[in-house]
Structure formats: C-alpha cells, structure tokens
Image (cartoon, rainbow, N blue to C red; front, side):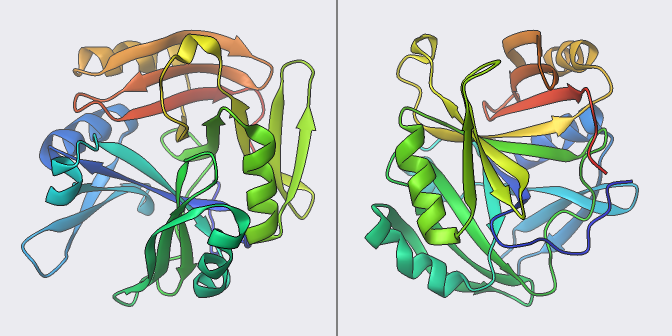
Amino acid sequence: MGLRTGYKQGTPSWVDLGTSDQDGAKSFYGSLFGWNWDDNDMGDGSFYSMGQLKGKSAAAVYTQRPEEASQGIPPHWTTYITVDDVDAVIGKVAGAGGQVFMEPFDVFESGRMGVAADPTGGVIAFWQPKAHIGAEIVNEPGAFVWSELITDDVDKAGKFFEEVLGVGVVSQTEPFPYTMIMVDEKPVGGFMPKSPEMGQMPNVWVNYFSVDDADSTAAKAESLGGKIMVPPMDTPVGRFAGLTDPQGAMFSVIKMNEVAP
C-alpha cells in the first residue's frame, strides 16, 4: 500500500472538499471510492469528515463556510502542500507576486496552515503538520494520487513555487506540454497549460484519485448524480476522466499505467 508517515516540503499531501451538501458528498464519494467516515466535531456544531480507506485517512469533506457561498464560490476541492514553516512561506507570497488569502493560523493540534494564490490566481493551501500529516494512504485505488494547476501562465506559476517553496520545476514539450514540480528530483505535482476549449474557466488546482477502471468509475459517478466533463481518454501516464460531483465540485480519476509505491 502507498502508506505515508510524512511529506517533504513542496509535496501536495492532503485534499479536502468544501461543499454545500456534506451528507450528500459523503454518500457520493463513499460509494465511488469505498471511503468510510470519521466525523470530527469542530466544536461549533460542524464536522470535518475524514474519508478513510483501509483504516487510513485519504481525504476530507466539510460544509462550506457561509461567507464563501455568499461570495458565489462554488463547492470545490482544495489542495494542501506540505511546508516546514508556513509563516516563512506565507511571508514570501507577496514578494513572489502572489496574494495571501489567509494568514497562518493553528488548526487545533493538527497543524498550522495558510492560504494563498499564485500570480495566475490558482488558490493553494500550505500545511505545516503537527498531529495530522496529510493523507496516510495515497497512490492506490480510492486514494489521492496527483494534483495539478491548470493555468494560462505556466512559467509565471512555476517561478512562484520555485521562489516560495524552493522546489524544482521541469518542463517538457513531448508527448504533450507539461511542467512538473520536483522534490528531491522526483515529480510530486504539475502545471497544465489551459487550452482554448476551457474558455473562461478560472486557473485552478485539480486533484486526481486513483481508480482501477476510469471508464466504469466515470459511469458510476454519473449514476450517482455526478457529471462527466471530460470523457475517459488515454494519456501517456494513464487513462483518466474529468468529473464533477452532484454539488458541482470538479475532480479527476485516473487508472495509472504505473503506480508509485
């Protein structure tokens, strides 16, 4: 299994969903990925529901904050990148051309986080772990496997993350244009150039979940009330599909050709 006990700085390590219908989202993703749920009381009447796979934390779902909904922010998945010192990282954001949305704050005993946008507008969370390392299981069916920023300026985004995180950035043109975030010379995430077909879609991080069969998973998602936005297709790294859940949050699934340990 792809079990984890920690992540190095610059590595996407956790994903959670802010949604308008927490119970509906739990039913959808539980059926789709086989997650069981550990509901953590936040002390204000709300719950942070950890989706568990084989007894390990895989992702989470929570009810979207009222102020987000009032601003017209739709249900969405958030990507968290592990950092050693979130205050230091957030302190570099403005100088690198980004925008700070949330200054660093403690999340109980779980960790410390801040939220920012890179210069192209992609919103990302930075996570300094304490009791919660992020996903305890990755890279196997039902678990998180990859995050990528879809952006109209890959170079600008890449320079931002190089500056604030100290990661490497490597670009390729074949078999398709793609830029990878490198930690210890290993790819941990990527940047995808936005295509004309994407129209006015904002620059956004998209999370991928590993599956045994992209076609059957896409069909099941549709039967559960989701939508197929990008029909299953083959890529050099695997067969994937772009989906939305019943509340409209966007995510992708992929049957990887090679599964990382």
